[in-house]
Length: 156
Image: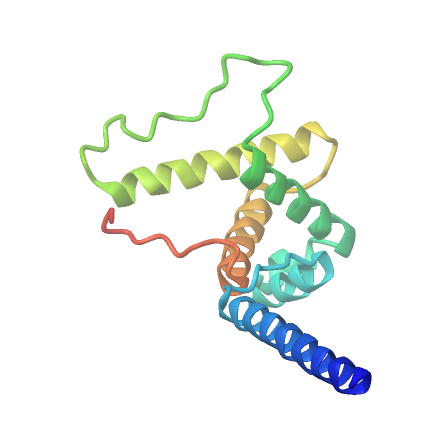
């Protein structure tokens, strides 16, 4: 009798555990995978996207520094300028009417300019053309891994 009670208890315990584990596995399987940004992977991908003349002017360390600073800028916004507080990015609504593509282009240009200023302030010898190419390729990489949603240009 005691053995029968133990066997029945073990079977019930196994069935309950299997049900809980199965339902949690099902829930986790349906969740979206979180994107993971890996510096080495990002640098390799972006290095392949860059035009030859720009890639030739950057070494691996400079590319990684640009990527880190750009990612920090995307996450936390541009750092305030310590030496010149009057430098502000252009207002994306000024002289653009209601064209969302033009406003987006101005915002992107201001972001790239701020990234360039930050890198130069930190003593990095990079050109605006290099920073523009790397930041554009970096945004493409972030979209590829799912860390940055594709922005629709029609304003929706």
